[in-house]
Length: 255
Image (tube, rainbow, N blue to C red; front, side, top):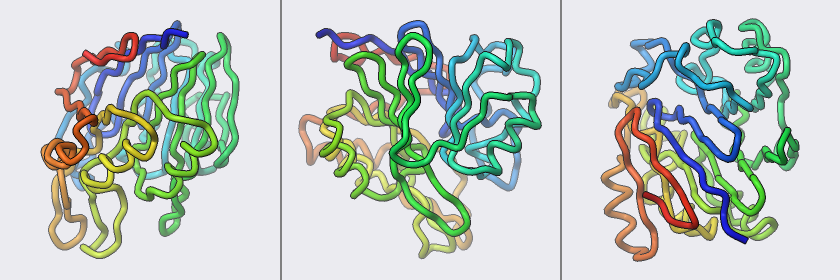
């Protein structure tokens, strides 16, 4: 069976807009700049320009991944949007912003939405006070892996073992650490390896627009490092695109 075509538009840093079938899925909203967070990219679109969304996904409750104040003025019917999050604090802020269909989706659980769209919660990691989710978005035979704060490789191995290969891996590449010693997200090398472990050939690089705070939150790698690492795996393609640009996957090929 032919794959369902899909598009990915990079909004900023870890925030993307996925279009598949009749659905739009938005991830990790961050519209209002918070200087101490150090995200170096403004959002490529305004909230008022978002299409009607089927779902919003949030990987964990830190402001650069979950900023519901920026979605208060979402221009379409909020009751039509399903929100899936990793933590109850995320659900609370989503309800305060006017969204009612909000659910903490535990690892290993999935939901089937209108039109056969499936959202799966995949194990990521427990990290200090945070629980982190990865997700897989499925429609028919097409599977999109999204992990904006992914760090650990074993859950990816286990997912591939149980569910088969995915069609694209959307993973962080800057390897940011807390106070130089506590790793928060994957390095570029690990993102390339994770893509391979998921049985995939395409890494869509995200989480690559943070200012490095050398003593507090040093950035260890970049998208360029992912491109270099991919040379060890000749069949891995690293996609890096500017904010606002749309990338399309059609019949197994990205363009």
